[in-house]
Length: 281
Image 1: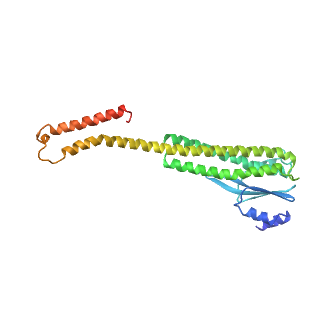
Image 2 (image 1 turned 180 degrees about the vertical axis):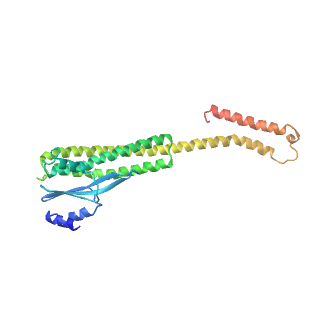
Image 3 (image 1 turned 90 degrees about the vertical axis):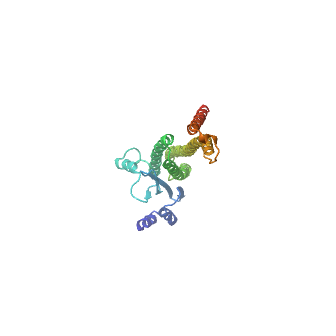
């Protein structure tokens, strides 16, 4: 904390920005001040349970300095560090605006990796939905859909941040960097399109699951109704000859019982044949 305060004093950073850095529940945004630009973005990760994790990254860059703040160790900036260490490309020859662009680009590229993994998960859920949908399938669909909402909540403001950087009139961001920012903006558009497509796909999968369950229930009800319909006349015959009246002609005949069973079997066989002819079975 003392280090952050000392750093803000040396760079002449407004105290309210330091509060935004320390409050990690901020929405991605960009603010321009005299002599520096302040950016908040969300760096995302994906757990083995396909849960999207969020980490706030704050950037403050002037014409000769770039300062980044993270919540915890571990990030997606290794590729940028390698370029700086090995002097690969033009990253050392360009200004701080180009370095800030590379940091933003690393975060956005990581969004593509998360989308790819979630896309593979969606394909697996589609196969499971067709073959053997269960209640666990429904829960996983809801879980992935929530992760798409988290991803959208992080990417949507990033478009505004990058668009502001591309069009803002400040000497900190050079015209030579605008073409890179334009390309980065196109990447965010692609991510948003993919997120919306996956959200629509997941909504359709929910409808398919509910329809599948409804059809399965209808099949079960149809079988129960057919079985019940078959047993209605059989129950009538059994109930008729189950009455304990004294004078019933068939009671004194030795063929009464087998004849009654034969009639019941013939009735059931005829009804099954009729249902199959109507394609009800």
